[in-house]
Amino acid sequence: MRSNRRIEIFSQRILAKERAVTAAMLEAFRNNRRGKAKEFFELVCEYNEFSELCRQWHQNLSAESNCIQLSLDVWFLQDLIKHLTPHADEEVVYITGHSVGNLRIPYRICEVELKEQSVVYARCTARSCSDALIEINEKGCCLQLVAHSHPGMGKDTTTPSGIDLNYLDKIQKNDSQAVGVIVSRDGFVRFFTSCVEFEVSIKGAEAEYVGDNVFKILLS
Ligand SMILES: [Zn+2]
Image (cartoon, rainbow, N blue to C red; front, top):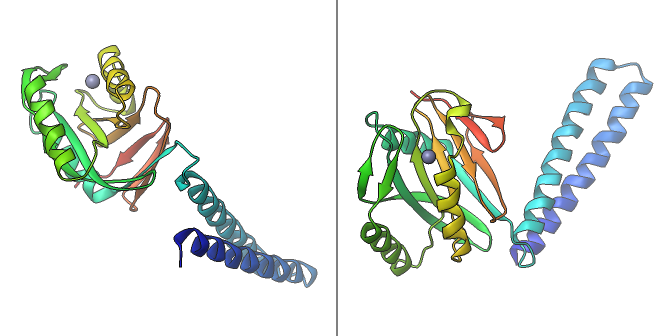
């Protein structure tokens, strides 16, 4: 069965369940069982949110949508932060992974060689960037993320600089759908873009969304 059809059936099943729970909730209200009614209400909210999410994914994964859906797990991000912060200087990596339609599941870190590196600046050699891109293409994948670290602590330290924005703008206008990522040493991860539309979701209880496409990742 095609996945679109399966999502539709699943979505309809959730809606049917939602209606049944709503009826049970009203019944509980009528019988003054407030505790039970509250439980039902919370369940309806959960179903409702999930149903919305399914509908949104269904819409965004369809060919008409240009919105890139990034799906990552918290374990990968914990590894990425560790990888990008071995010392005080900035580090840069390319990241690739699975792609299905507009869905991107980044999982592989590709090294690029740096020609200049300091606490606030890192630039890769043109040769190593093209080598990494060739290898990614030869494996049938595409560049999904360009990630680097920033010094300092807190959400604001992950704000992209003018150089970061210009660089991403250049590669996105050159037909890449790669999204930018900046990490801090204390576990903040920001996703940013120039002209490519994207949405990001992180799986795992150790990730907390703090707004503006920034997540706080619990580090061990
Ligand atoms: Zn930067």
